[in-house]
Length: 326
Image 1: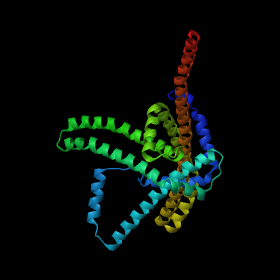
Image 2: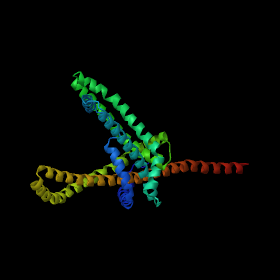
Image 3: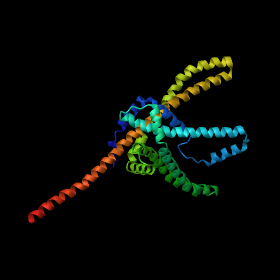
Image 4: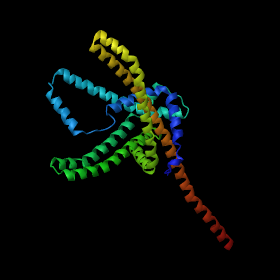
């Protein structure tokens, strides 16, 4: 199995991923939808007892009017729609990037159809992965909370540290189970459990290269932040005199509107960059997956050949020797 990270062409992967992302700009829309689902926290099961209790208290304090109930229903429907579109977009990204990598031209409509075909596979992989994390969290952290509530602070601190040491690797493993599981189920056309099993085996045998590949995202994220910081300067230079003039004519309200407009521009740029980044990141994982999965397949074939060749070379001389004796 591929354990030597030097054999994986990381920079070639980055270059090819950038080329795929830039040449296929229609995929940026799918990146935007994936981004929205991630921002809504729809890709992970989160449990924050403090925030949940505070939110529940706020909800209880509000009068249950038809408008409030209607607003909650509309918000729930909106989040469900974003969840569905995010899952479809993830499948569309993977299928379309693989086709484009192989030279098969696609468009938004065909990619969306491909994404719909893989909806349940991606949903189930994400669902079971999140359930695993939730169960692990419910096993590890309630004893820590119980000890803390009963003022056993020292023991709860050590128990919490042990729980974190166990949970963080599980969190990392589940992240890779999703990354590789999606690719196995779409590119390999495997079922949910087979995809998760293969994803686990692939990650277990390629832990160092996989983590090293993920580390390349750190400088990319820093570059995006630097780019946004540099964009603030020209936007500020343009909007500052306009805001001053509007402030003199319309007062604080006008200045606030101009500041809000500038913030809206920055948010729009951020969303565009992040949407492109989602496509770029998915392209990276597809190309990296191809490297380690193909390496594994070649090694399996080599192992079979190595096992069979000695048997055939040993039996032939023995047969000939017996014939000569007769």
